[in-house]
Amino acid sequence: MISQEEAETEETVTCLHMTFYHPCQEDKMMFRCLNFCKREQVRADEMAKFGRDSNICHYNLLDTRVSRIQFSLQFYRKLHSSESCFEIKNMSKKTKLIVDKTELGYLNKIDLPWKCIICFGDYQILAEIQEGEAMDYFETHLHLAQVPILQERCLPSPQPVPESGFSSSSMSSQDKNPIEIDENESC
Amino acid sequence: MISQEEAETEETVTCLHMTFYHPCQEDKMMFRCLNFCKREQVRADEMAKFGRDSNICHYNLLDTRVSRIQFSLQFYRKLHSSESCFEIKNMSKKTKLIVDKTELGYLNKIDLPWKCIICFGDYQILAEIQEGEAMDYFETHLHLAQVPILQERCLPSPQPVPESGFSSSSMSSQDKNPIEIDENESC
Image (cartoon, rainbow over all chains, first blue to last red; front, side):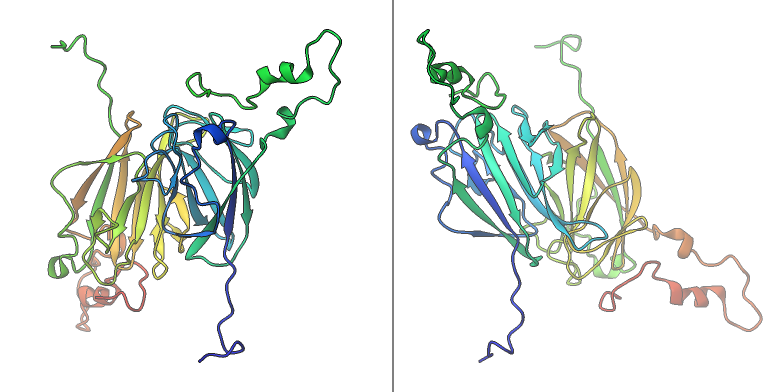
C-alpha cells in the first residue's frame, strides 16, 4: 500500500462551470437531461457537444428549437505555452451564438474567456473556468440559474408605479428577452 | 424534371488532398485501410481523425507505433470572413506533430496552411487544400507517394563515388530518415 507521503502528487483538474438559464425552463423543462448534481469527466481528446440530438450530444437540450448540435467545446493547449484553454464553436446554421459581445455564425469559433456569458436564442449560459493541471481530461459542472443571467437588462425597474396606471413591470415585460432572438425562437 | 437552366447553381466543395509516405509502407502496409481510390465526404460538424483506433478514427493507420488518435482535423469558418479553413490538432501524448516548421505537442493546434508537409514519427504527409464554397461538408482525397515527400533531404547525393570506396548512397543511408523521430519510432 502506498502511503500518502509516497503517493504521486495529486493533479488538480480544469473544471468548466456552466450555469444555464432559459425564461421557460420551468414549463418546457428543456434542461431535464442535464446532470446538475455532479461533476462529469470529459476526455481531453473529445469534443463536448451541446444540442438536441442525444446520439451526438452528451449535453442534451430537449427543445425542438435547438439545433441537432448547437455548439461544441474543445479543450486544447496553447502553442508555446503551458496554458490550457477551451474553444467554443457554433455548429448551428440557424442561430447565432453570442459569446459576451462576439457573434459567431455557423462554424465560427473563438477562445472561451475565463468568465463569459454564452447566448443563443433565449438561452443564457454563464461559463466560468476553474484552472487545473491535468491534461488528459477536464470536468464540467453544470448549474441551474433561477433568475436571468443577463440581469442588468432583465431586472424589473426600481421605479415606483406611475399614476398613469402603467406599472414598470408591465413596461419591462416587452423587454423581457434580454438577448436578440430568431423569429422562430421565442417561447 | 428540372432543366439544367433552372437547377440551382452547383456548389464547389473544399477538398483536402493528402499524400502519404512512410519508408516502410511496402513491408508494413500501414496504409492498407486508407481509401486511395476515391474522394470521401466529411460532414463539416465532424472531426476527421487519423490514428490506430478504428473505433474512433475513420482514417485508420495500421501501426502499433501510431497513437490511438494521432491527429485530428476540423473544418471551420474564420470569424468576420467568408474564408473557410482547416485546423490540425496533435492528439498524441507520445509523438510530436510537425506542420512545416511548427512543432505541435499534445493538444496543440494550428491552422493548416494551404500547402504544407505534416510529419510525425517516420510518417510524411503532403496536405494541399483545394478551395470550395460548400459549408455543410468537405471532401478528402488521399494519395500514396512512391518516393519520400521531404525529398531535399532524401535524394541520393548527385556526387560521384569517391575513390575511398564510400559511395554517396551508402553515406546517405544513415541520413535516410529525413525527419526527427522518437527512439521507439524507427522501423
